[in-house]
Image (cartoon, rainbow, N blue to C red; front, side):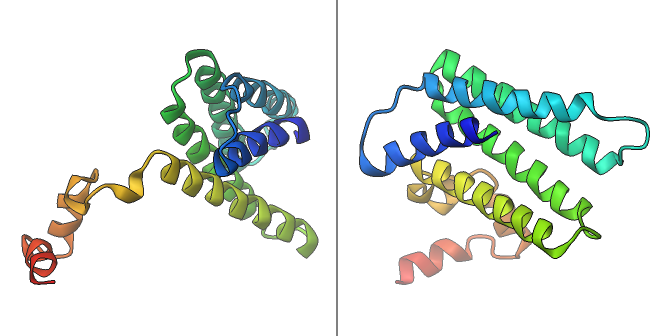
Length: 158
């Protein structure tokens, strides 16, 4: 697990400081983390709670996506992996409601780390530079909030 997280950190840090890290490091992260999730999956029994089985399956999907990223060089797919890890870690945190506080705190830090990974990937993909109307679901959000064309008026009005 730590080897996979170290690979993800190297990719993230490389992007932050402008050092080119080979995209194959993503595949190495996926394989390293995949071993951990495969071990967890092998330990599942009928008594394993459904939420944990879903978390393990989601984590496995994230690992497989990282391997695809490393093999194809399509960095945008890394966002799919970060979503998978965020969902998996969040589900585990929910499942740990009766665990000792130290365990829950550690898992909460993993959720925060996954959220940071998601945010970092979004920044790397330039999502923060997209105009609101050009974002996926932008018009749907306007419709849901009853804004219609109001957002353009507010932007134009300064």
